[in-house]
Length: 434
Image 1: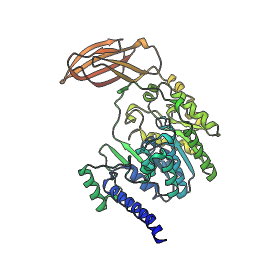
Image 2: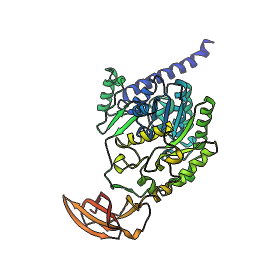
Image 3: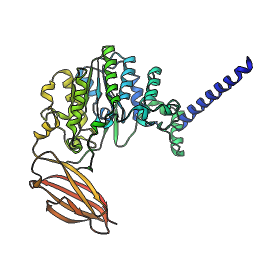
């Protein structure tokens, strides 16, 4: 009998020692000392109560200033937004919050950039998933999340703290810095430092960066792949609904305001908006899209964004004020929103929001205007090359949207766009014809 127990005991001891070694390695090599998600989740578990919970991806953490919302609504708010948070992450956080707090209402943000386009059975380990899973404290919720965030062939990666996507850093300087912060206790003070951003309490991260007026530019963007949204995305949204209904927690779905440039360059935003609206209507829920706010309630400038879809230190308070008034019932939904993005942009004067740029084999650049409506023949361009600090005009007030680079040079191409003779956009892009 004793001999029969030797092998199982050896296996158990080996697995236990292996796991302990993995935990020790993660303690040394995990570089999350300055990860705002770690700070956020520490605060998440330290609240006296959360009345209004906001879940979603980075738009949530860059969207609402909880201290301001607390004052305006008289409620205790919290933004549980984490980088690239998937809908399954929002589901786990709603469950975790409900196990800790007496929630009055939950708001789930449905950003199209993080919709599921594949089954979790096909997913590989993801940093964005583990940023949620690793900081969940409720063991059954944590285990369920690990089992559903990636393909079963990666379960070992999920359950061991040294797997792929777990913020491991083997750089000696980083290892030393992280290790010292942990043994001195600095790590456990949950401080966050970023020279370009401020972390405010209860989940708000605000950037100092801003977009210069009319300077939006990007590569040519693809439409939102609405037709490829996986059925599991819808199933998980419905799981959140089922959970909140069972718990008696009121629930709302919304989208944080994004720039008109960003939504216009996608080309099919209304298709996505209608997809979400129809999906939620199946369960009797409305959908509140704050990208469709009328300007008399929320008017955002380019300088209110840190990039084309995240609010900054200027824009976050503006949105916080509006959504707080909406929550209070001071602004009614029927007054606040346009019915579609097209209706919103059609109500504006003709405008070039920015440009999409295509490099043509290091010989030329094609410029595509990101434009709401109007007469395309009224759009003209001025192209300048800045080489070693000297600016040379290549073309002025031309209707042609392609410009050849000066041969055998590198520098910046300055692109200025006009509509009906009035400047509306100006941006600079590095080029090289060497």
